[in-house]
Amino acid sequence: MIDYEQLGLGDRFRRLIRNTGPVSLTHFMGESNAFYYSGKDPLGGTGDFITAPEISQMFGELIGLWLADMWINAGRDEPVHYVELGPGRGTLASDALRSARRYGLEPRVHFVETSQALKDIQLTTVPGAIWHDDLSTLPQEGPILLIANEFLDALPVRQLVRTPNGWRERMVGLSGDDFAFVAGGQPMDPAVPVDLREAEEGTIIETCPAAAAILFEVAGRLDEQGGCALFIDYGHDATRTGSTLQAVRAHQKVDPFAAPGDADLTAHVDFATLARIAQSRDVRHLGTVTQGDWLRALGIETRAKSLADKAPQYQQEIHAALERLTADDQMGTLFKVMGLASDRWPGGVGFPDA
Image 1: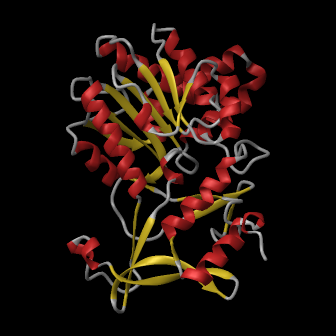
Image 2 (image 1 turned 180 degrees about the vertical axis):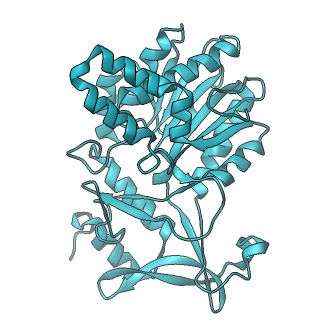
Image 3 (image 1 turned 60 degrees about the vertical axis):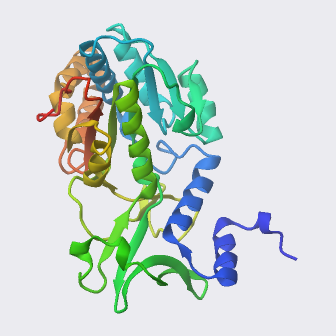
């Protein structure tokens, strides 16, 4: 008899599919990433990918200044809570809080994190932080200053595909021993926007129910408690069709089906849809802008020059980090920054229409 617990995640999926049929992409991606993040630190040169806070301290510092500016202009309400979704190693929080402290902002720190391996690192990086499994246990009094950097992209997506028989959910099945996309049997036409129902065969619609739920809850808290939020991720600010599912392992793109649980599965964030969800709760959408434009508006070039003047031996590294964060052919254009705020709070620097 096979010990199910000893099977790798890929073999568990194969047994499940053979026994019960194809699984949804949402199920496949959700289980894969839960397994992937549960017991490892995936960040850095020896990991699978690197995020903006690990590239340069400038990223977190400017976020801290933006939060302090928002809080000061809103009246310095206390208690105030710094909330970060998926804080990685705690690097962003450490840099942001150090920067904000110079202007009198010393919030209580809350991390929404489920990975024990990352919690252990965060405990050292940001002593005194309070951990939460989800948003439901956050304090309900006092404004929140919420940051989510490269968090939404790892949430499981759902895909619908137009087949000769109409719209169906895109499922994960088997072709021999290999995972493969198949169309589900349940008609899904009512779930498709009217203007897309007659799209050509093969058209794919991708949504992220988990991201929608999080934005709805965050917006509700901003409306009730006051505060502001920044969501920073790669994605698009206009709704589009097509699959954006991808996987990264050892800093290289790989087949999303090649090694479930051993690679980071992600999809582009649909900021346009998420902005509409936030606005449904009477929260201000400050705007969605490119990361490069936002960081330049906050003065990253001046900060880079200051750092280089103080440590000329690191000038080349500082310039390289600046380019990686802001250049159009690196993170500058693909990554977007979406700002939200309570309608009782001011507009924010870097969002021209706020």
